[in-house]
Image 1 (cartoon, rainbow, N blue to C red):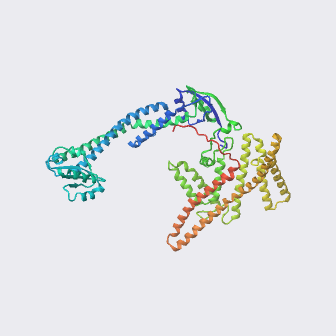
Image 2: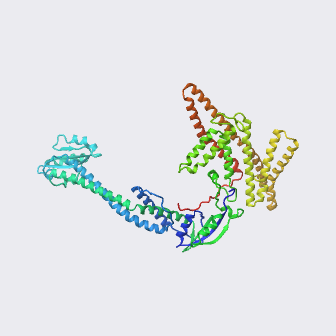
Image 3: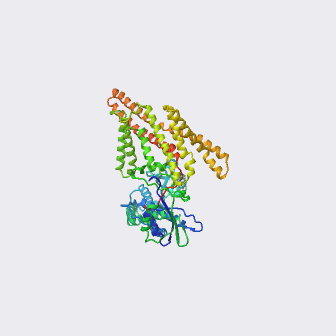
Length: 631
């Protein structure tokens, strides 16, 4: 709880034939943290082509699911798969399915083109009289010829102007998108002139029109029949496509699941090494679950080649993944810690201390019973929303903290309807300022103590007894605090001299301890000595700055009280001027305070955690424990 969970590292082996079963066990257990294998003499597993194929197949499967609007009724049972088998089966299925679907789509496209042509013919024929005259006698008559087709919409006025004074007659229909259906009739003797006129208007002749045979009325009827045939065939094809989707629904969803799992497994396999038939697996497991894992895996062909419990003071501990393990109430605060960085496996997990100090600072800055109740209710509301349920505990905890400090400070939506159990920050600003300073001193001292404990865990005595960040630094800080209070409170000079002596000794240890140890081991290095002396000055300034930085806790507390008081006064003024203005102002004002000031206070508390507390001990850059799972 106070330190990351203990880890054990295993070197495992399994055969190629048993790999799928082993991966399923790993995925369902959700405890194995795979590491990249480092032994160069073993050939790395290569599934590059399979991985690329599965990626393409998964993309195509998702397109099919989207095209048919396929949805799952329930979550599928997850299982491990053989990636090469999934690739083979998916490719076979998709080839057959896409060929069949492609033929139907091509036919729909052809029907669309045919419908467009029939639509054009129907428009052209609408220009002809509904007579029982053979249409070929009109197209290729003894004395006249007729052409049907389209011209661009922009050429309509040009055509009208150029046919004036000629024997060429033109009839038009309303435009089809950007083209105008036309029929042109002209004497055979004027064919050359007609050709020039039509070319100038960018006339596009319909070859299908020229192929029409039969009487005009019969041709019109056949066109209408053609429309109904197309409509019927299109409906049949669309129904058959829909049935294709229904027929393969379960299969396509199974392939969707299996391709995703196969891609995940190939990512796991990519971290393994192999000979021709054996896979080697480098993995970390939490030490407390290893007995259960060994029991559950006894029927698997999974061989333990080596096992090593990672001691926190060993060299291997520097590379071990970190698994935080805190009680349920404190888990929401793990995200605050991880936002800064992952704690070291060799260090202290600051989650519990973070949750306590964060709630103290938030409550001290945002201490109002009314605002706390609103935050509490928001958290309870989130709890009953399944999607947001996991975020509910944090606002609940913050709301409780605000409520407690609101009672201590006698605050309720900026008013003071009851006597404070402790004191009123707005009326006791000096006491409020000291509250922030005391809180800061406690957190900074805790940071030194954690650093000392981490040195003990690592077995680094030199770090514990000589470092300005450890025991000497803590003594230096405490003695500085006592000196400061001694001067302010006028304590006896004898005690001030004693504290001054302790301060001086701690400074000498910090400044000269490590350089002397290095001189004994390797000889005096003046650069190290100068660097150590400069560190003393930096440490002194940092301690003072870090402590004073916590005054912002008091400043935000006083600011919160002043802001709520301003809202009340503005509300009272508006209430005298406008009926109901008081209540609207109070509602909107408190809403703004809860949202904006609450967010600002949250960020400030987080900043103090990161820069004033964590900076004393936190070692960044460590890796998080991420077990592989089938999910």
